[in-house]
Each structure stands twice: as structure tokens, then as C-alpha cells.
Image 1 (spheres, rainbow, N blue to C red):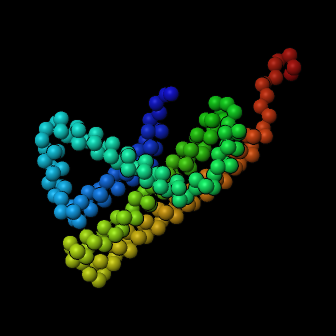
Image 2: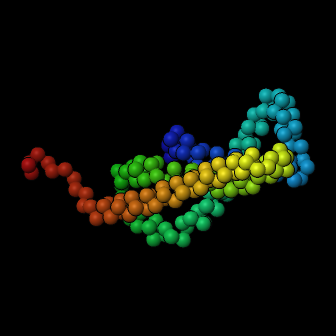
Image 3: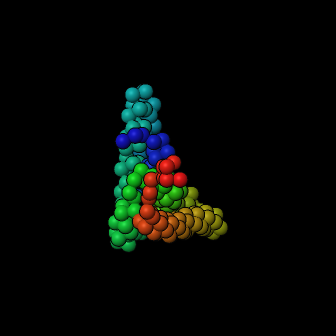
Length: 198
């Protein structure tokens, strides 16, 4: 299996980055609700030396990716796992060679599937952040009135837009996948005619 930087970049955006948002939310919960001085402890680990810094970065990446995978599984359960079983089987019937696989990966996975996963995972990761933002504004910053509602509404609008974009991209993916299956399941691939036949 060859390494492709584009696939790694797509995975980071669709899994690791949303997982890092959840990790930050967990650390905020530990700081605010469990009374653990998280940020001081992280600062001490970060400044302890190069080895500790590398370990801190690797641990952060591993935890973010783990949380991102859990988040991804959660959103798949709610979005489409029970709706696409038949389509998945038809898709594999349509992919008959490397050419159709490349077409599927380029036009469907890269252009639609990974962006859909990014939008869906980020929107799911943002849901707890909405409540944490409200707690921070009220209980910690003691904001009221417009100073409270404007950030809450802006965050909510961004969340709704991200969620709506996930649904729109997923529907686009389903339509294009059905068209791909219809075309490449019925197409008769023939070898080019030789010069003698021309």
C-alpha cells in the first residue's frame, strides 16, 4: 500500500482536527468542573525539555485521533450507516479495475466524501463547545445581555451552517455515487481495435 500525502491530509482534517476540538473540550471540563489545574500541568510538561515536548505532541496527536475516530463512528451511526448498505454493495460491483477505482477515489472520495466527513465531524465536535462557551461567558466572564447572546448566536449560526453543509455534501455524494454505479456497472469495457481491424 503506497503512502499518499493527500489521503493523510484528508484524514487529519476529517478525524484528527475534530478530535483535537473534543480533547480541548474535555480539558476545559476537567479545569472548570473537576477542579484540576490542567493548563499549568500542560505548561510544566511542555517546558520540561525536548523529550517531554515530543512526548506531549505525540500523546496529543494520538488522543486527538482516537477521539476523532470515536466521533466519526458516532456521526456515521446517526447519519447513514443504516441507509447505505445496499449502495455499498453496488459500488463494489461497479469498481472492476484500477481505472474505475481511481475515478471513484478522485471524483467521489476526494471531492465529496472527505469534505462531508470533515463537516460532519466538526459539527458534532462543536455541539459540546456551545454549552462550554455559554458557561464561560456566564460563570467565568460574567457577561450578560448582548455580550452573552451575540457570541452564542454567532457560534450557533456557524454550527448550523457546518451541519447543513455536511448534509448537503452527503446528498451530493449519494447522487454522484448512484450515477457512478449506473454508468460503470453497465459499461462494456473493450480493448482498442488493432490496426488490422481498422
